[in-house]
Length: 356
Image (cartoon, rainbow, N blue to C red; front, side):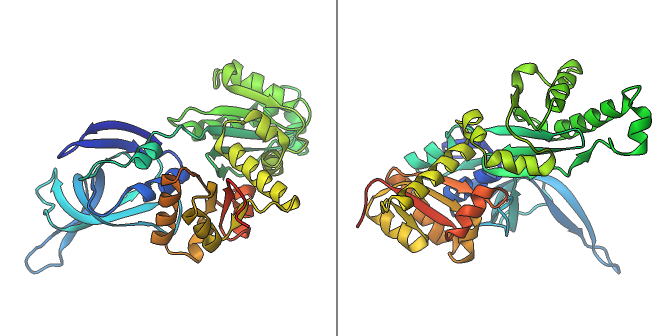
């Protein structure tokens, strides 16, 4: 999440840009009723005409919204903020009317509080970026490109070389088929880079991964300093992506990334289970009890927890835990890690000491 201090109506405010779905969980914990949000948005304007149905037009406006309600909009990819418009840059939009702003990764907005910002809120805003990576799993027949942001994985459908087809056999002599294959991959990479700074991780069996790396550098598509080639992953395509995310290479190459940290914490929990050391809590009720005893070191939760727990209860628990010094990690079901947390009730905690 990118944040920069700025001036609001009555004092300190922050210009915020969420960069990944995990950031929306963090913002859900920060934004509260009474806050002021300044953002670009759209609104439908009705024009009343005599003897005809009203004409409608959707216009782009900039508004200041006094927040009344916040909720994750049936998806961790969207955060809906509703409230009352207190100012706008268009006279056609009346003050005092209701409006909702949808916040997605990449949305720019200013957040102001009428009170002093809490320390834990500032810590969330100023937390280090959890890492953005482009993963490329490739062999001679197929490849897959995936974007890893925090613990959220977005995979592009497989790209096929056509090596076993007639066209490939006819064009191999001139090398056009291989170049076309690599060019398709480079196009997929470019579509994922956008404005964020990404490290490129390439893996798969054989030497195709090195040939692709050389191609991307020669064509000036990527800087060689941003490319890391991984050995030991023997599958291409989507299977290779998921194999890498479950491998020991993940922790070695992405040691400072959020997904690696969370993976290590889950391994730690399994170690406690095998040793019969009750230094963990599983499920919302047990984690809540541990938080109240100030025993929690880390909490990992997935969107699955919201199936059985209302948002306000979850937000209250997470904010209380962080005030007591716990580390909070949100994951989603796009990766194996998220699925593992979901299977454990959607929320787990590692403790500083045994409670029993």
